[in-house]
Every structure is written in structure tokens, then in C-alpha cells.
Length: 127
Image 1 (cartoon, rainbow, N blue to C red):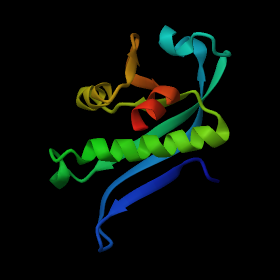
Image 2 (cartoon, helix red, strand yellow; image 1 turned 90 degrees about the vertical axis):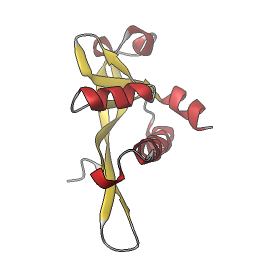
Image 3 (cartoon, rainbow, N blue to C red; image 1 turned 135 degrees about the vertical axis):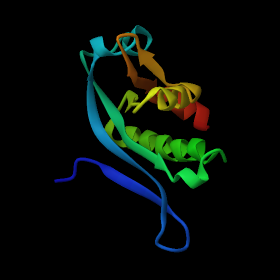
């Protein structure tokens, strides 16, 4: 059963240095920040960024942002085909939440590590 698609970054050898996974998702409008849910149906199609990981030896070089933009560009491409309104991520901790916030994601007040960003905003930033 295919529930997610995983993309892998590697060097010229088989050593994996980073990866991310994307999956189709559905969000209930009440779970979104008001700005993102306004005018949407009750069940909103989304892309879930299920995993995002970078080898620790590569931290601090800006590659995490590049990895995220690779994931978000693929999420936008998927949204063009399968119609998604938002990208959803569940940050693993406060540092990860700060990383996603820095890249435009918005947290829900009562679930601070569940974060969202509109596909349209991502597409505009990528253009």
C-alpha cells in the first residue's frame, strides 16, 4: 500500500544525506488557523510533509532550507494535479517548529507543533 512518497538526497555514493516524505492528507477546517480556513469547505485537501531529515554533519549550512524548498516545490506540483489547499507539518519539537515558522508556516494556537502553509503562498514564494 502506498501511503507516502519518500524522496532521498544522496552523494555520488549510496550514503543518504537527507530525505523527506509527502502524503495526501485531509484537514478539517476547524483545525486550521482562521486565515487559512476562510471560505474553504469543511474537509480541506492537503499535502502532509510527513518526514524531513538532514544528516547532522550538514546542519548549519542552509541545506535544511533547501531540503524544505525541494519538498514544498514537489508538494505544489502534487497540489496542481490533485488539488490541495495547504501543506501540513507536525514539527517534532520546538526547534523544528521555529524552523518551519521561519519558512512561513503558521501554528494552530492549541496545537503548537501542527503547522500549516497555503499552497498558493508557497507557489508565490517559489516563483
